[in-house]
Image 1 (cartoon, rainbow, N blue to C red):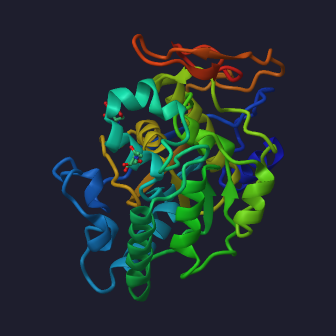
Image 2: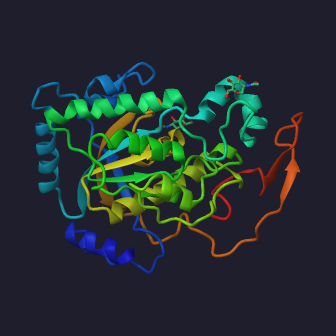
Length: 345
Ligand SMILES: *[C@@H]1O[C@H](CO)[C@@H](O)[C@H](O)[C@H]1NC(C)=O
Ligand SMILES: *[C@@H]1O[C@H](CO)[C@@H](O)[C@H](O)[C@H]1NC(C)=O
């Protein structure tokens, strides 16, 4: 990993800084390049704007739009000073999942306090590993069509895909891209691109062997069992740190310019925070393109902000009430609003 990072930075001129001994990715600094996409402009209302019917928000409406866009991104990279490169992130959110349907049905309090920790109410199932709802599948079909629609105008397709290990995101990725182009590039699952860590049963992922069998188009460099479900409720700050860590890892190892990332609303929120993007809430199955300037973080001193602990005590599973007045549910770990998440910190 570190060696590949060094090679990549050597290629992009970032290697003139010697890396201290450090067991994480190099720290990178991000900023949004405005002007290309309407979503980076505060004047665009994310509650009503439908980028899927508007060339993903590209500000240039001409028939040559994406060819010009490519030329611009190419020119930005050619003219970039040492240690700087420009990438385009296509941030994609999964289509509506069964857990989204259930949350709406039960209401937020009953959901957070009881039903989210269950997998079913007898007629509908949202856990473990919530799947896309029928509406979710049709939302994704629409997103796939939106990509197809832009192909004749030269839209740069993702040269690589990074995807959450949860089925709703994996299905979204495969159903969006299989009708267009998938494999190559071979999408890579990233354990850390998952939704806010919590007790929610719908956010417990399936075993890796099941995922490999169900999504043969995707590479799964992950452990068989889910190591990250049913722990502390991850705070927003904790999630921001986790996603910053993943972004640094992805962007220091992936030399692509056009990078697809398929994940969840919480992950996309933290990604935007890391990029310094304006607040933007993406609809289910939405796509948010961002032009990003990537630089070595000059404030970086080699400190570890986020990492996996080598060993930990496996917590007992017990019946506990998550909110006062609600029936107890089976949980392990502590339900606290801490920074970082055990067994990660
Ligand atoms: C179970 O939950 C679903 C929403 O996920 C709802 O549509 C359905 O009516 C519920 N069934 C019962 C028996 O309450
Ligand atoms: C992320 O979510 C928080 C809490 O909902 C919100 O205050 C913030 O504006 C969001 N940030 C972005 C960049 O969307």
